[in-house]
Amino acid sequence: MKYAIKFAYDGRDFSGFQRQPDDRTVQGEIEKVLSIIFQEEVALHASGRTDTGVHALNQVATFCPAIFIKEEDLTRALRRMLPRDIKLVQLCRCSEDFHPRFDAIGKHYRYICSLEDHLFERPYVHYLKVMPDMERILRAAAFLIGVHDFRAFSNRRRGERDTRRDLWAIEVSQRKERIFFDLYGDGFLYRMARVIVQYLLHVGRGKIDPEETPQILASGSREKTRLCAPAHALYLMDVYYRFDPFA
Image (cartoon, rainbow, N blue to C red):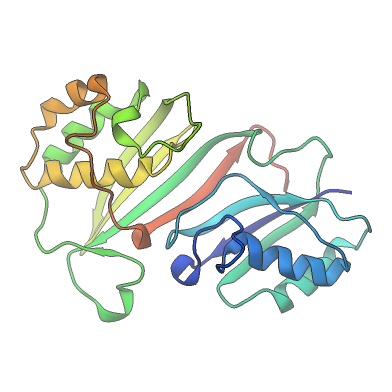
């Protein structure tokens, strides 16, 4: 018996998504609740990991308990028992061969900046003291679209061999005091989204020429892409599959 769940979480008080023995994590909290409900240890398998402080609106995961509980009853139990910073969006039974990570064909990340420093928004947006040059940012972003080796735009994890990814689109838009960076791709390397956003902000501040981007990509060097944008303003918006497991 396999269930798929779609869920959101506020990343502020978690040490990332992945289970850790001595820290509070998203995976650990959900598995704790599932183990109480099913009276056995239940392992959660997600579409991917998020770093400490990163939020999610539509993360996807599966789990396979030994006993069956009706979807509506399990949904009620999870919504009642999950901590306040995790929200169950959707739950259903799914195919035994569905894997939330290996079956994913793409992801959408959003990074939110603000030109105004609102006290109660500080945990969720990255405050910019100066308006960046949007035209320069868009010129640099255009060079990043497509299939590239993004070695220069990630903090490589141990064992992460293939650094080629297909970045489908980077949409940069401004709505009042907020600037949104929407990144769509077939997958993202470790901290790749945050490195790209910080790089584009540096370009927008005149610290890097937009036309240098192809050379930086080709070099594989982190010399001009060492910094990451802060984690607290990054959101996993959606995970894409050829066949929607929740349809």
